[in-house]
Image (cartoon, rainbow, N blue to C red; front, side, top):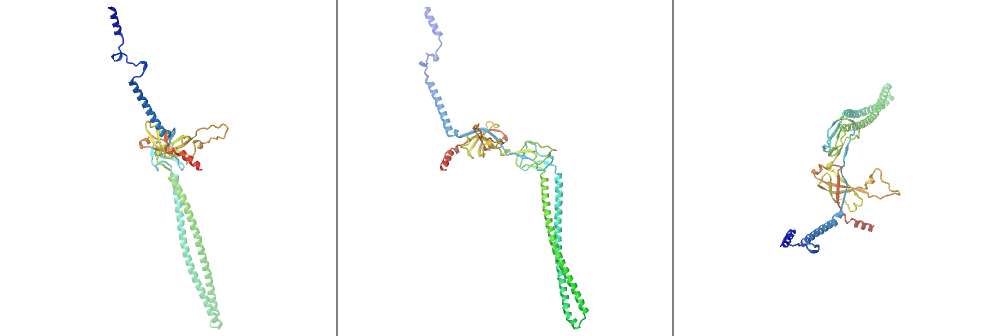
Length: 388
């Protein structure tokens, strides 16, 4: 009776099978129907995802050209004075936004104002010379008119005296008049003739004097123009003591201080037009074959993590970056090594007001350009080459 008890104990110590029944695992390690369904779903999903990715790459992905060799830029303007002098006032602070035409710095203008006042007085003197010359010209014309009148009177007197002589000569010959009377008439004629010649000379002198007066008037007008030009130059110098911003932007690199002596061209600060910022991307020469102006671009700025901006290809540089280097490479050597060149591409950035608060020149950017619109370019190039 002990043996059956031990057998029951051994059976009771055996681990229970899942499900409360005997082992259901298929012989030879084959998958269960449930595992097969799960595996089929996974494989099908992988095929769908892979196929979708492949279709997307074929239609879109292979036309996307990207580079991280790109930086934001802006056409900054260096502010420098046109005249020399001491700085007496600085109107702006670091990083301040200024509109176009806003005053930035004021120089001591006393010497320029004094020069302007002096030249203004010189201009007034030249105007007075012209007025005096015009008055002299009117006086000379009046003198000419008077001299002509006197000449006409002298000519009439000379004619009358000559007529008297001719009238009395027969009378003297007949004895009706004395020779003394004829001598008096001849003397009067001589005096009238002398007066006539004097009046002719006076008229000629007056006519020549008007020419001299006109020449003096022309000289006074030329001197007035020279004085006015000098006064205008002095006025510009006085106005240039106030240095103004030529563009709208933000103040950067401000080095000017009150009391500093500056010469023309001294760098005072830089105005950065952050509202007109653009992107300069350096693409490899193997990436620009299908790239054209007007193609869309996606821009990722490191400073704006999680937010992408959009842009448009604006233009291409007329040469690779190495062509504009200070020392362009000379490849006419025996140890030439071909290096992929990069072409600067300018991209217009479409950014809102909130994004532009962060965008400043020099920030690193990753840009992707969709070149699908240029996918027919190789065929057109080949066609043009065939026609050529």
